[in-house]
Amino acid sequence: MTEPAAAGARRDAGPQVAPQAGPASGGTPAPRRRDAARSRELLLQAAIELFADRGFDRTTTRDIGERAGVDPALIARYFGGKVQLYLAAVRAEQGDQPPADLLAEDRLHGLLNRFERRGLGPSFAAVMLPGDNSEVQRAARAHLQERLVDPLRERLAADGVERPRLRAEVATAAFVGVLMARSSGAFAELTDAETAELEPLLRSLLAALRD
Amino acid sequence: MTEPAAAGARRDAGPQVAPQAGPASGGTPAPRRRDAARSRELLLQAAIELFADRGFDRTTTRDIGERAGVDPALIARYFGGKVQLYLAAVRAEQGDQPPADLLAEDRLHGLLNRFERRGLGPSFAAVMLPGDNSEVQRAARAHLQERLVDPLRERLAADGVERPRLRAEVATAAFVGVLMARSSGAFAELTDAETAELEPLLRSLLAALRD
DNA sequence: AGAATATGTCATCATTTGAAGACATCAGGC
DNA sequence: GCCTGATGTCTTCAAATGATGACATATTCT
Image 1 (tube, chains in turn green, cyan, yellow, brown):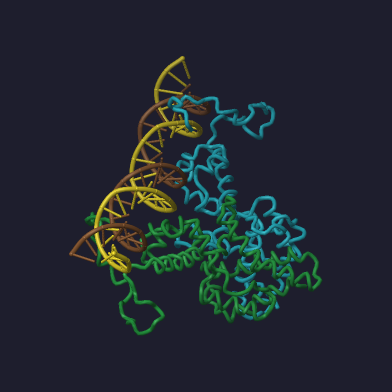
Image 2 (image 1 turned 90 degrees about the vertical axis):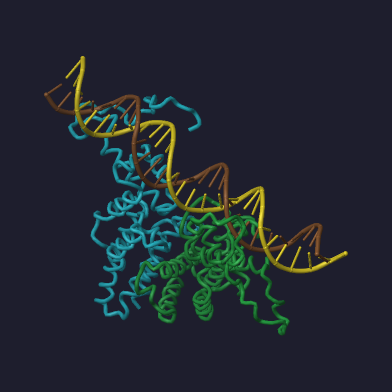
């Protein structure tokens, strides 16, 4: 950053991918030094992690580029800009599993394990902070509504509980709150707790809303 | 903002306080057009509200000044800067009541009513978002630890529950999460719900951690 | 009334950040 | 071998933001 660095002279910026994995396996079609699809994917993955960790505002395009090992200018080229990259990250968050009903045992277990493997996902951070009704907030909230609140509301309604929507929203908010607080490092034991320790507590918490 | 506005010519920037309330009552010592203590208080109050609403990063000194009706430059003069103003806001958050044990009925009721009257307070927003271990985060987290987590932990420990600290942290995180989500407007029914509707749900939620 | 201080107002600076563009370098077709 | 487009690298710009200082105006003291 501090060196003048004669314009466009860099060529030895470290091996992007070790050029092994010869032409044997037909899967990956020989590593290219320049691969738009790969760069796009690296940026998207870095964005998912960073947006989940810090939220939209506190994540800079330069951070994303650095983590991805890709020049931040390519964000504009491949996604259109930071906002569109965020929307792509939220879209990539879904599609794995069908919407989850938090009260079903295997669902909670699966969700927690998935979070452990892949991080919380970018939409969680957008729930807690109010803000301008930007596209970013709306997308993240719609995602959570569809994936967590609605299935739970249907479950509660089927159980005949009163105010199923409100209860589903409270349960989701509590769930997101606990997971966000855990990953934020605000509370020591919560952050250090294993998923297996946390799961029964969360299950009790959620079950309480069912009355 | 767009006019040149000859330097320092403004004098008619609206009446700060109607200069009535004659010398009769000895309470307020006649309104002054310039009152450092009043300006300081206005800034602090605006800061408490805005920090609670948007968190530290998304609140600008210009926003605070605008809401307070005070020039933002005075933040530096009276508090030293934005960070110190935040710390002052967190300190102002406490001092009202003794630390609250969320499981005691009147405590929960009192807390919710207080939030309804005075807003959530700046420290809540700092729990959910990770970030640099700045002074701001540490102060807000220490505040919550002392005010909410510790009393609850003691209560749970006295009840003989296992893992009292972890449970207290989970309960606090869930509590903060529900209130933050409510004020963020992320969930429609939760945002519109009356405190009276929310209170029994929160009570069930918290009681579940006691097992 | 007039000096001295307190308080308020405004312009401006340095930094950060998202974005855009100029240029360099690689890949594949002829 | 070379040309055209794709891909990557770097510089630069405009806006936002926290901070600072010069100056204006009010308040107080004598």
